[in-house]
Image (tube, rainbow, N blue to C red):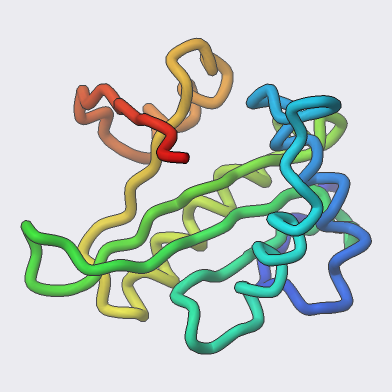
Length: 153
């Protein structure tokens, strides 16, 4: 039986979180020469434990072992009276996929957002991420948006 639990990350989870973080970044082409600088990873991890930063890290455990991560960012919106929750990063270890971790993480995001007074949880993914989109279509509504971005040096 696969027992899945989701909980807030603790500083002691770093060694389990880091390979997942690296895997997530590799999926989006940030590895080797294009890897995030170590300072960004350290800053990101530190933000999760700084009460002044509106970010949170959740981890998913499968049979007691950390096998998934989710990063949430809370912010105000120009179209809502209260805050919203951006599910910025979601990743499960390849060997743990299909066991309900991603769904459990997303459901946890909904609960956390509601408890924080958020009226919406949203996220983006790449168009080619068909496997993840199959799940996303079951747990949320595709709104048809296309995301643009420009790096500012």
